[in-house]
Length: 522
Image (tube, rainbow, N blue to C red):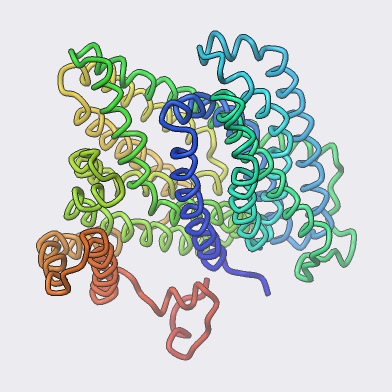
């Protein structure tokens, strides 16, 4: 049976949670294996990798899923596989060209951009991975388009498990060869993991049959030339968007330690502050964002399907509920990180003094999670051009804060810039969404009710933590127990005040009962 977009999002959330936990364990193991210097060398290639991969894959994946959802909604099932094949051929060819270009210019990348010759082997291994990752993005677009996300969930888990297995199997040989090869080990694990990801997706694509999209006739068949034009027309602005955003983000984060240095801090202290912000506190803040990332991914085909049928009521319902879930998530984790910043940070990064940075970043949760979900909605509505403009506005604000405010006020000024810029971007995106769909703003469910629960949580956080004192547990276990209880209580309060309606969630999940029949169907 065809899954609802919320069901798909929950499958992705579960897979994302598993893969992030596995990835977290892998990162701890890798850092112990190759040391801080080795991790530093490995991290040097990450911006190049991210820039290339996001530019190549994001547009094709979204374009394929969007077009497939539209054709499926119109009953033109003959075009579904044809769209995925055209997307696969196009992105593989483009990525092959990019790989050749990078190989020809590898010395420039290593010596001028990265400025560390020890990255040569890692970059060399990374280059042939690019077509593999790009091909996987086309398959993902196909599965997202038919709202069948189980294959991508399994492929993500397979990728992480294979990556760890390869690293464990080859660790001894690579470590004996020196630091350059030890760093290349991480890239080898990544490469083989991505190949396993592609193999799982390709196997599902080849052998798994989905009756609800099986072509019964040649109705609505579109010429391949028109499919190519449509995919390029949809993918190009998204990829350009990601390219510009990635470049501006790279400039933003590279400037942070430089401007801290200009403010009078010594180089070691600058790198410490930068590491606490981007390498330690920010990943904790963004961990719950796997919910909004998954929702945003499944929203694109879901909204496209509704819009193609001129069913704006269904589209608005999906948009409104996604925003409501996001706001609940944002308020709960803002309160959590505000109440327990030092306890959480010390549990995960003992002795690193990350708590203060995590406390400051707690105020960004609502805005960053909301920005993610609104990006998915904008892509689903086909508003990539306006999304790019709005995103550039946000990036410019943050870069100005980094350049002018950090030397005088330090990291807190950057975090304030993040809050202000994401707020501006969210407002701009909201204006576009409302104008495009006519959706009414539901402040009662989005802001007032979850906001009231957040206030209660802020006042009761210390009491929840103190409640477990009688157990006399180790600090880490005590913190885990308190955090778990905090989240359970938060969700209970959200349901109590109506910020989360479990009956509607059951309906969105496709679970029918007498209690939910009176609610509007998805």
